[in-house]
Image 1 (cartoon, rainbow, N blue to C red):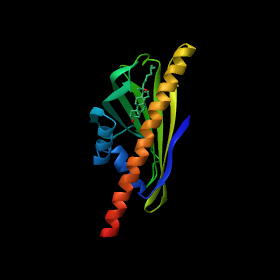
Image 2: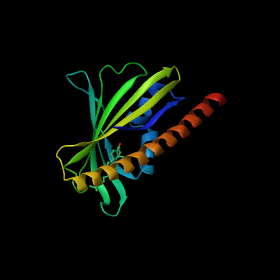
Image 3: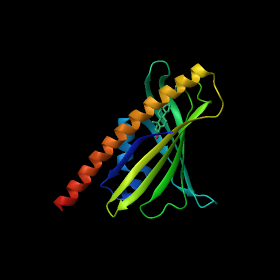
Image 4: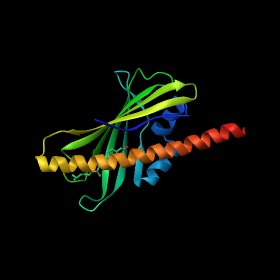
Length: 176
Ligand code: YK8
């Protein structure tokens, strides 16, 4: 796997969870920026295992002429049961529905929000491109290459948007 985001923010763990994993203005705005449209976000539901689950559906705008302009996608998120105060682990599996070879692969993003003090947390995202069945080598390297570049871009922008959010939040805190 790879890590494209691993950084301490001046944002509490609870707040970070709220920004990324509830129907927050932040995530709405971020999706708009990434041209991820028609998003429907379910609310978290408790499973028998004690974990929480929810699904998101959206349409991703793609800027790759080989792949097309849009794809519908489903993201299944699991919030693990031992997620404690200010400390969360969310597993997000992203399935695209309309790109070539979409039935061969999906992306797994594991978000760890780790409390580092009352008002600070580390956000780390581990990513893997997973195969459900093996395509031939050339196709596989094509999928992998296109996936990594799209994912890297996404998390680079997430980092910079979070840094802006952090600056605004801490500005507000100083003013009051
Ligand atoms: C989530 C991984 C692959 C996919 C895309 C597929 C190309 C197909 C390759 C051909 C378009 C928001 C990506 C980047 C779309 C965006 C996905 C996002 C960023 C040659 C067969 C969407 C996180 C996420 C995970 C996977 C990303 C897709 O929250 O290249």
